[in-house]
Amino acid sequence: MDVLVNIDYHDSRPIYEQISEGFKKLILSGVLTADEQMPSVRSLAMELSTNPNTVQKAFGELEREGFIYSIKGRGSFVKADSGRVDIRKTRILEAIDALIREAEEIGITRETILNSLRESGVTDK
Image (tube, rainbow, N blue to C red; front, side, top):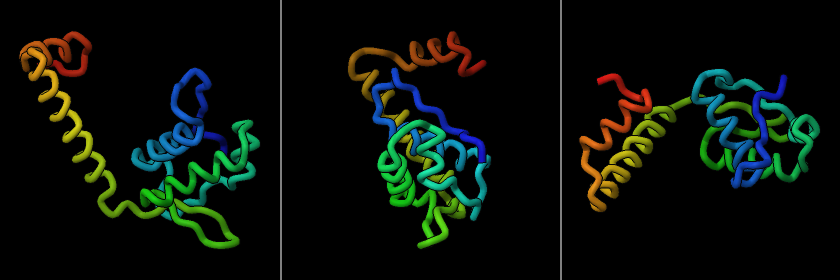
């Protein structure tokens, strides 16, 4: 497997979080599919020029969050979806709602928010 995840050393997030987030995006977008084998910790660490413990920490986070599962002696594999995308969408919408409420609390109107979104090209309405 070619490395599909990149590390940005200018990013303030820890490297393990960047690795974890990169794989989450690949799984959620369907690039990596259910039961597909993940790269080994050692090979990924070599390809990313990082410590194997960093990759192991990222994989541990992915496993705790239900994105992958491990089979002793065989490696890590992508876990079947089971509503993961819907859960992620709900969390994103909840975060957007919280941001809108926070913006309104400091005097930013919904109209201003919508205009900002239109100007940035996020929405066309």
